[in-house]
Length: 433
Image (tube, rainbow, N blue to C red):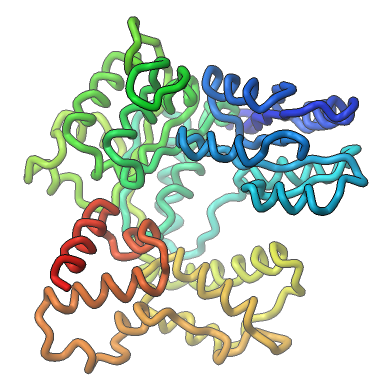
């Protein structure tokens, strides 16, 4: 098993020596720390060396400007605001409103710094499972973890494909190196190329500075291509070349850059069918599908419902500072009788809701509620579907899911369709009305 993943922390600001104390504590906790005194210098570090796992930023700095730059350049780095004790509560709340996830007082407390590291470490627990089908999946992932081969992970939305990918990385000899994930369905094609391969300053309109891509960020580590089936054919060809040649060409660059990256990919679609339908390159499919792992749906591994439910009760209670409750027999029977169309993600959301809204000393059956979409898929309210065409039923399901969640990206995952397809259908419904 490889060494523990080294966290990358970027500290921005100059707090009269307190930042250097925080740097020392983070180093002692095993983190790789870079420190600069301004937001502009921090952005240059990110663009040239890759994204840090977390940015700890002085509240006196322009946090709103930093967060805005990160959004515009599609850089995903959580920001934690830091301020000397005595800093006005107004500045702390402004930092949170500007986009900081948390506020940390200084001088630094060693345990508080450790808690921040734990927060961004991805909580590297082993996969929680009990059912034989899922146990076999985890055992297979463990066997291939320390190999160089690419792995294609398939399964329905919400089954835990990215969780399994992180498990493979954690148990590989690259675990001390970066794990970088890219959602190919959530990023428009015009931006995905730059996101993956990077660009030079002036390579296109809006390229205000050089930025390394995800391949370079994942050098000597693991790159997860999430929902790879949504990648356009033109980019598939470029991705194939990068995998074959082990080098990337930044947009606007003059020379190739060598990269050493292990590729993991996920898909909730049948990629072999996409190959037959000429939507996915056959040569790229075989490059990615060296080892294939399929995660079963939650309803096909019923023994996992109980252990996952208890795990989510524990984690949700800790996260919200609540006393951990027991799950009553009636509540567990209700959970085990559900078909879980949203798989593990739906179970987690259901338990989260039960923990927060339940009023008794234990979670009762009355505290367990399912979304309207889930209830309909279980056969409740069937009369609403009778007499409708498949097209009408599909429209109702899509609109109800988007309306219920209020998040198109999450809705696309639960519906099992790409974000691009979902948006196209919503445009069609808008034109019809």
